[in-house]
Image 1 (cartoon, rainbow over the protein chains, first blue to last red):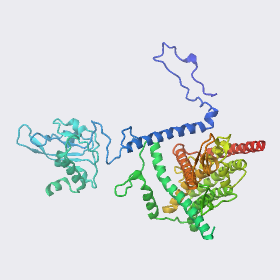
Image 2 (image 1 turned 135 degrees about the vertical axis):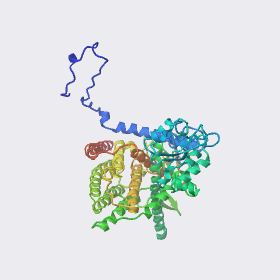
Image 3 (image 1 turned 90 degrees about the horizontal axis):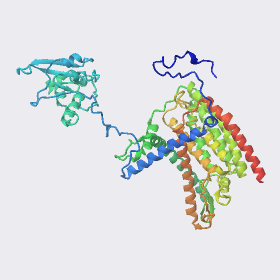
Image 4 (image 1 turned 180 degrees about the horizontal axis):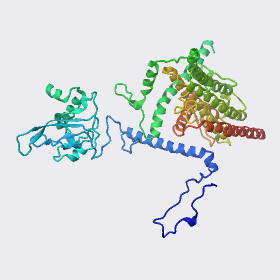
Length: 222
Length: 362
């Protein structure tokens, strides 16, 4: 059928010499001829129509049952997005937050590990001294430019104090200005883990996204 | 019957058939979205709402028409401005006209007069539909020609090649149906399908001309220029003959497509599925071949018949949508091969065999 020859059987090494079974597949083999039924195309059309029609009727039946309040399997795989969300994976890396000590102060000791490890250079920390000898330093300001962040999670892994986490569950991130994408210390501290996310924290985040002020200006304005 | 009554009856029937076709076409825009969605395990368009009421996306019909009417009507720089405006009118006009000869019911009696439920009982109704389907290509070709655009012209040429090829099959299958019914009048054809075959089977055309039915359906879908025969449109290749149309002019082409779908459904129903006939329903009510009758009034019988016609048309619209959302588009050479090398010989063979059988029976 084809003029391209496969490897002759006698040049293949004996089974014992071979490291493992090698199956020779001749990819240059021509496609087999279609049978008469395949060539007239109509049976394939009918089976295709039967498939789509089956989906149609099964889904319609499920939609109808749902309409009358009878529980059934969903007729569509759709999630009506703004109202309903797909459940996200528990380890999803979402928006950052800064954790707090029991007394409310940030856990961050301004060690600069996250700023150093960040491949996108999106973290900027200004450290200041603190009287407590156990802590020594704390962030005066802690800005994350979400517009640059690549969500690699290195900052979380680098942090020795468990001060930064990416477990807020917030994935809707967007602002009308570049400045709005820069989150400051206060906003980051107000966010919580996805289970105990507060309305207050999300609102402060939304305010930050919609404001056009630089973080420093925002602090002064507040 | 007074002249006023006669005229008002004709106007009434015309309004009914136009209203029916336009409403069904509008609903088909919704059906197309929803049916494809349900077939593909999706939900489909459901966001248009009036006062929070969504009604499974039915308001998208209104949203669409408002959008179509308020968009900018851009006319390209073309020497054929008049033809450019005329083309969508022609496409829509001829398909609408074809509905005039399609009987949607048998006859009702008003004031002792028998009023046939068809707008225009032509002796050559079958030829009339065939002619309207053929003239429909003018709108498409003119659109392609007058747009002053290479892609539109290619689309127009493809459309004419495709429609001419498949019209031959349509014509030959119509010849088969003509030989079986010995009439070109659609009202007579539908009445003939009320007889019983072997005393118990309704003598619908699909039993007498099964091959003719399949061929006509394929060629008819090709005439509608929808997937899998949307070579003239071919939106992944050339956008098609209406690439230079916007606003409601484009909407008219789209609407003409849907109306052609309804037309093909109506013609298939009329020729092969008994038109308005309901099995075992005669003028006096149901009369079953195994004895037993259910007497019914004239209006009830006619109501059933019109409903039956509408249901059959709706079914074939659904079926064409099913095909449209299941099969991929043909290549141009495949389309021509199918038209000339498969459908044409088959329809010729169908014609000849029908002729032999008809002669043999006589």
